[in-house]
Length: 200
Image (cartoon, rainbow, N blue to C red; front, side, top):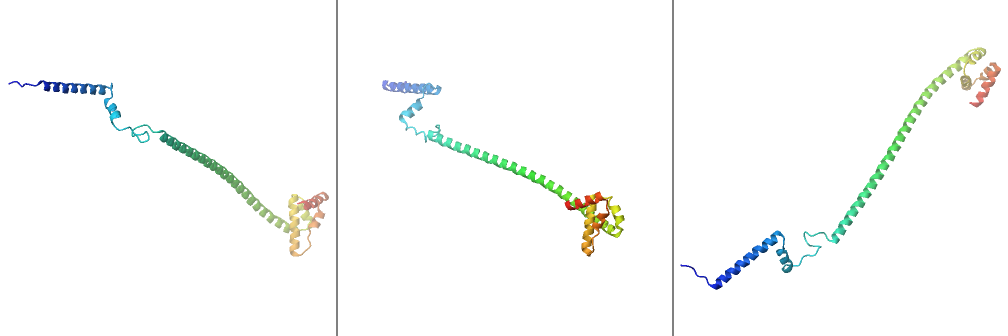
């Protein structure tokens, strides 16, 4: 037996079908991007959008941008300050290294001078020993033979031996023969020795 549907029910079914079709069509338009139904409905009937300072996912506000720029500027200034300090430290290290090299050179020069002085001191010690020996020999032989021997020496050696003879005489309390030995030398030689003894 066939089911009979009233005219009122048919109208309701048609309305529901039409609403369904319209809903599907609008959803398809929203999907392809022709219209934005959900966003429009949210803006009209939903809550008001939050301010830019607190809205999540939105771009930073002007205040936030200013704070970020200030922080970036402080970091940049800090980096510049550190770079300047590093440059000053590098310059100080170079100056210290230069001074250290100068001190090393001075130390080398002093070491060389010390070695030369020690060598000269050794030579002088040996030289003075020879002077004392020669002074003893001159005192022990005849004055004329002593003068014949002395005139062959260098002037400085003659002077040192004569002074050593004076020192020996002073120690023993005897008369020095240095003046007598000079008087026995040739006139030119004697004059030169007396002159040099007043100068050195």
